[in-house]
Image (tube, rainbow, N blue to C red):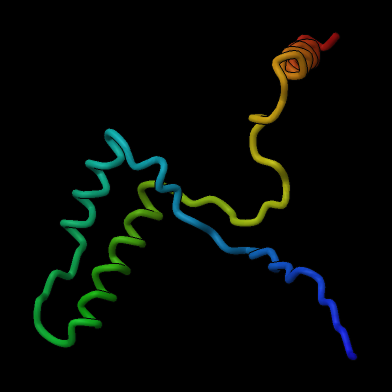
Length: 103
């Protein structure tokens, strides 16, 4: 009997790619984005449907990057301190205040 055990497949990090900060789409940014899409959009309804779709999607993506901003994908470090206990958060805060005061 031949047996082969393979390890888990690891995904490679996406280096140099950016994603749109869709979480910024609230309040005034939503209004700005809607106005920009309406003014810059090529809303011609003639031709191939897939081409029309691509034109619209490109306009929306370009406008969203401009208004909402972008962030890097795969920074490789933990984002936030949601997993810290209250004691650790307090000590980190005290250390930051101490560093600001130059003590």
